[in-house]
Image (cartoon, rainbow, N blue to C red; front, side):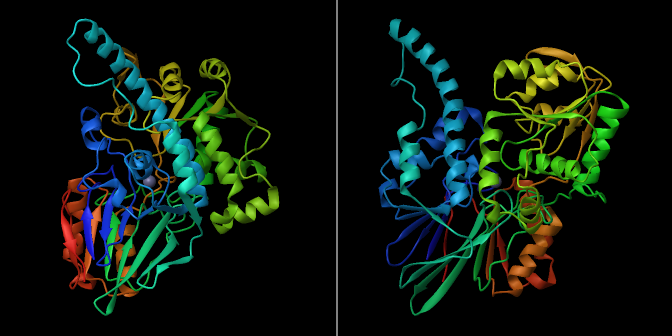
Length: 478
Ligand SMILES: [Zn+2]
């Protein structure tokens, strides 16, 4: 078995790993967009380092664009094999891929303007700028996908078995175990996809894979520790709402990713409401993608954890309650951002880069009665990161704005395990199998190295080699 790392190698985005069996079967695990560097977006994603038509199977661990975003392009370039993913991943990907195409088209339109201007002057280079794929390729993906259940074992043939395990993280996310019979023996390779935080809202804890010889794991939060919050999500949210909306009569603005984070927050607020603890304060969810994703979460309760399933049996809806208002229209969103009454606004995107949240932050950051609650990881230099660093002025839409609102942070909704949880996951996997090698992917170089150093000194891991592969690096597994 050959394993080649074609993405998320010493970086976070662009997950794409190729497994080639002796029988000739080629399996691609994830086919994500690499958006590490905006200037290199075209170069990194337009073509593949292998023939798309040669891939027999594509396994999609979950719907996030850094894992699924280049699938339509793979199809455009000739892939016609089978796609395996969970039902929720299939539905969520449909929306996320369309959203990603819309974002690409904004850039493409700008580039086309320049292209046609240059064409008139006869200085245009290359062809007319295009997105990586078009809508028909997303539709093809939906047609080609086979929705499987976690826990299901799929026998591709006598020499290849695929097994899927819930990995937490977001609705429908899975880890996959690939078992191949080669040279008289079985080889078992596990790939985590993205793992979830333990005790997450809505999604179950990651399930350990058993009997593995090799493991490829995400390492997003290597070297990081989640804020030590003794309170539960309900207590944290109630404290923030009481302090901002009741005591200070302000607005609680929460930037949140559309898939996963928004649903976890709305579910928590609904729990408080159903327990009779939530004050009479309106809650607005303002992101078109989040609204669509929320419906999918509600439709797939069997993929959620016990707490959520129990709540759903008791109360019906996981998310809607009388104080919740869904903002669909862009004009309504503008009105909401200057609404003169205390309220909670949950809007995307999570790092406050783009999306409707930017307007809500812009219009509310200058008032001391308001709070901006950052509920997730913010990459360096994003607006969310600048707010967290305590800058007294932040630039939004080319204008400096004073920061008078309270800026707070919570990790309680994090969708990834932190360093200690990752180490525990590896130890538990080792106990259930016989790991020879652990490959770390999907993490910054520095974060990955901290994790490797810790594991290299771990007594339970003396027989396991920890690798941090480079892009294009190939390993023979036997
Ligand atoms: Zn993810």
